[in-house]
Length: 187
Image 1 (cartoon, rainbow, N blue to C red):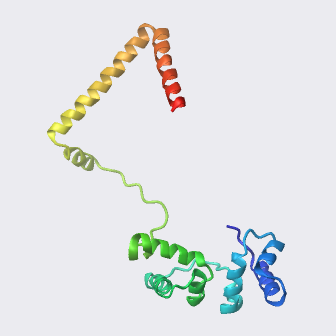
Image 2 (image 1 turned 60 degrees about the horizontal axis):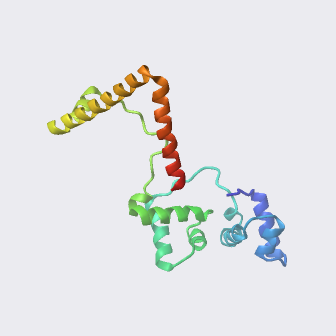
Image 3 (image 1 turned 180 degrees about the vertical axis):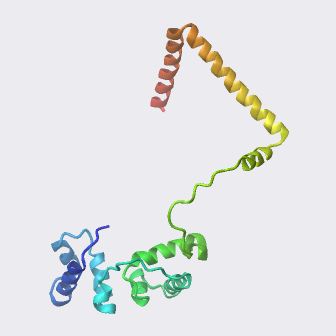
């Protein structure tokens, strides 16, 4: 999304309001991909004046109740994103888009603030590792051990075959690899 300067927004809004040119032609004149931002700027300007065109310097945190009120207003009245933004004195319709999406996917939980940054890397202690291992039944542990031994055995057999005759081993596996590639290509 292209970010436009405050001066650019003011220039286009005043040109639209005092000129005889429509949204589309004005957007085309200034090489904008769409006239939608221009429509939103004009609407914001009409509702809030110059404040409607200003970019916020800091991110404002909105309460869960405020977000919920905005979403409910939109759903109950059938208002557009822009109308809702004007009603709640928001400069960006993208906020409402995000809030509505989060509300539809997760309910009120989606409107609650999320923790920022990376989660801390907690190291698992030996006790925690042992507890996780104890969760397996005796039978499951034995099955796991058998599978690991089978894998180790297969690896050692291939290693021995490679050491005894590396060229024959490579040729054999090269043929398998090429035939697998041919199968994938034909699919």
